[in-house]
Image (cartoon, rainbow, N blue to C red):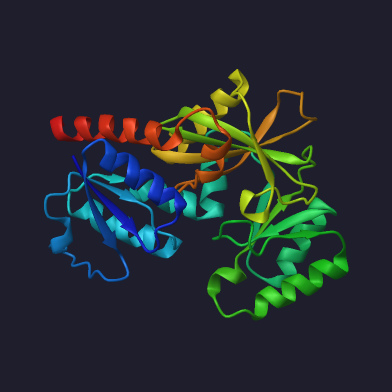
Amino acid sequence: MNVGVLYSRIRRDEKLLLSELRERGHDVTKIDVRKEQFDIHEPPASFDGVDIVLDRCLATSRSRYVTRFVDSYDVPVINDPETAAICADKARNSLVLADADIPTPRTKVAFTKESALGAIESFGYPCVLKPVVGSWGRLMAKIDSRDAAEAILEHKETLGHYEHKVFYIQEFVDKPGRDIRVVATDGEPVAAMARSSDHWLTNAAKGATTEEIDVTPAMLDLVERASEAVGGGLLGIDLMEVGGPNSGEYTVHEVNHTVEFKALNEVSDVDVPAAVVDWLEARSAVEVTA
């Protein structure tokens, strides 16, 4: 097959996928979205001969729009643009999880500093304020007091972009020093890792230590349901343990559509890029015969 890879920067994750695809004899067409022009009627020439497209755009805004264009060209794209739109927006992500009766942290959205402060006070301290669009734990704040809330809200309200004026507020989940990332393909786990840190943020991008863990039946149930809720595809499902590390109870706080997996691949016995390409080959075969 000829796999088109949408990108704006080739990271370690993309290098792993490109290497695996080429080792299997597949053609790869790298499509730098920074250099393309997307016509509403005709695809760019770089799409000629491409069987399936894998979205690995670094910027969420590019991912959301480019996948829409690719879909309009009737070229199969991973992930589907609707999945990308849901996962890229934390508010939509939370709504979809809640609508599917998937346990997820209590969340409120407000649009003014005053109403956001009221939402924060309704949760009590600490609580968490997140950007409605963002990744890698950036611009997230654990708010421990009213003074801190007022200062942070004022800063956000004065920032220029409209998304900073969408105040996305969640209860603080007292997790046991770690969270769990499961990489899955259409709801089937590839591998999972725990990300541990003394800091309340446990993102690998923030320096958390990682270790492979087994997917329990309870985790599998949530992974399958969360994947289905957002439309399936290649996803990273993030869970937090509630009630302690051995309680067997979890809450899903996020589903990621352009999931990074290099940290997982380093600690897992599973060859993650190989598993992803296995799945891509199967998806491509289905698309060709459809």
